[in-house]
Length: 243
Image 1 (tube, rainbow, N blue to C red):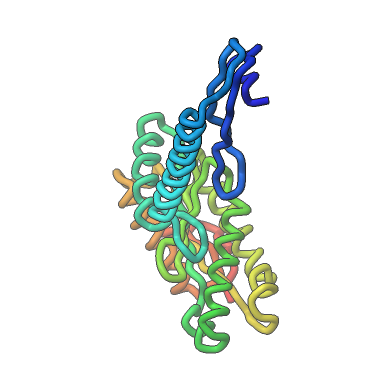
Image 2 (image 1 turned 135 degrees about the vertical axis):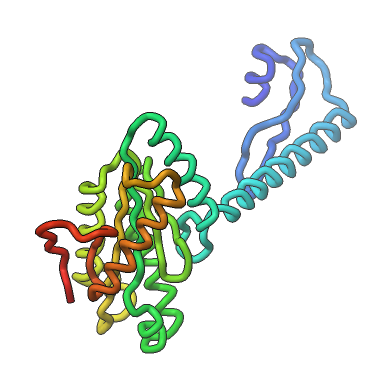
């Protein structure tokens, strides 16, 4: 029926499918309201055009794959460090311009080297993949999760104040502590994470300052015993969990 789309009421027509990886993407064809015969030269031309169109689609697909690979982490499928920095800088400026809240959390897998030594690097990779999936499943579409490097991850929470970010981070920490990741890695593995939280406005004047604040918060969480959520400075009445 492709000729009907080319020219309704056509009496002479020829349509060749444009295919890619076994799927028909469309048609290229000619049609006429007059009765007649499509010449062999016209058919050869259509086949050539369809072939070129299929190659063009394949090239577009490869280009899109290259773009995705350039901004994502190969193991976890999350965004990579470089792209996260770009997005965070842009979102920080937007939040500052319009006076909207923005929070950043930094996550580190506790004693990851020891875990690798005990369970092997394949299990370590599976752990990181599992944590990446946990983040991906729990962030909103407007937020952004990334593998920051090694066993460290980061999450940008748009339109989110520090208190909300703390609550979100605590839910992540608790999910890992009760065995969410261990189920798919190793039955006898005890996996915990430490999390640092920073929110704007936080006395910083750049996205780099926000990262530095979140890093200090993460360092504090690790220094105070790990498996906890911390801000850069102690808060009155803080009951963050210790191990």
